[in-house]
Image 1 (cartoon, helix red, strand yellow):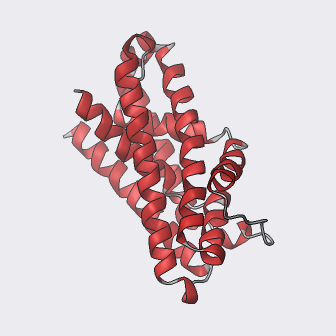
Image 2 (cartoon, rainbow, N blue to C red):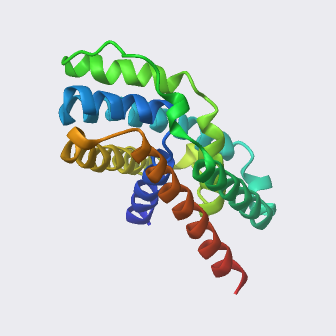
Length: 207
């Protein structure tokens, strides 16, 4: 059970980090301009912010646990619809609009992490994505089961960090030929993957 919580956290953390928005473009720009290490450290800042918001989202669900259990199917369907809408939004979005000027860059690890953490933390609406993912996967964090909650959040951070590790590695591999149009390809792939995964989950519940 504890391993399952950890693995669910990894998967949800990875999925939550995949859509490329303003923070993703910022991290990509850092990777292109300063290399993989700076980009990955920046990604860790975003992963830390998302993990904190995931904890807030998950534990707030625990406050209405009886309602969640009573309407579990409806909430899962609602979460799935929300995720499909998110997938469509990601698929149709154009990341070029997020590209700004030149952010101030630094090689100091702590500053890279903190800088991106603050940028990501300025968007608490990410909790709606977390709630949708939690509902779709049937995840409820409880104050009475803090060990399970902490393992899930540790997995969530690990999944998010894995996404940024892979993404910055790929970008660094092709950094001399990289353009923001590649972000559009990532958005198409991420949107398609989210929609396909949700449809598979819905088919599993109904059949």
